[in-house]
Image (cartoon, rainbow, N blue to C red):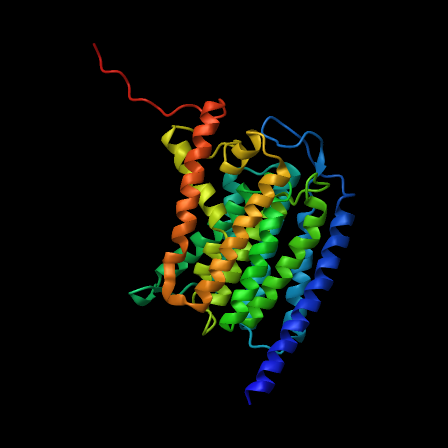
Length: 365
């Protein structure tokens, strides 16, 4: 009876792909409409653009994904999370998007934005979206107990902010969103978490329709409403898929898919902290920003990161197929990112884009 089961799986995959194409078209249409909403990102000393650009494109990503979520919940016959979790997932995403849009309108302070993200995380946790165990190579399954709530909240807020930080060049966050969500959909489908795979495809479709208008030179930005939503949605999808009986590695898979964003954020934070800078102050010294300021175009930097994400996606699929590899699959990407960061930081210092390393104070005479 393997053949009927295989045919059913193929039919489900085809349905998901057709739905994703329709959602991508919907996202493109909504993005085209949002370009006409006069809420602009006006250039300042930290900007990488020279003219006012609408910052409303994220609304198209939000609306498209929620439409896909509603369609899957209404018509999909696949095993799915319970209604409470899906409802909490949708509500938490709306909270994130609302705070992000408020920031796009009036620039909320860091504490207010963080409060909104924590509120969204609390809604998701209360609905049952919790990482309850981790699977470590050599150690087997480790139950997290109450620590699972703290770990999940940290994961959700961290990824939401990391994607937000990396949304600084035309096509960068949107392109990574397309590749990461599509690769996650493939991995989730192979692991048996087919409902989460459908959700990931809907997110990839939302990013794809938006990126048509965000590719360099961008006609629209996703704004905080889009970038915080995208990061939170990716992180939450990993939690949902990890709760599936055969999808237990999917949180690690998502971390691998977004490793270039994670590394850039951690490296930049550590470098600024070591230099004595105010790490909560806005700046233009992320690795991707330095690469652009050293003369690489928006298109070149965005394609470079999309290629990295594709490579990470291939490794993520390998991890799904061979879970015993565990964190070893991260090693080549860590080595590459470390060499890239050291080279780029030195080049930026030589070009005067970064201060030199702090030297110890001279001893008293």
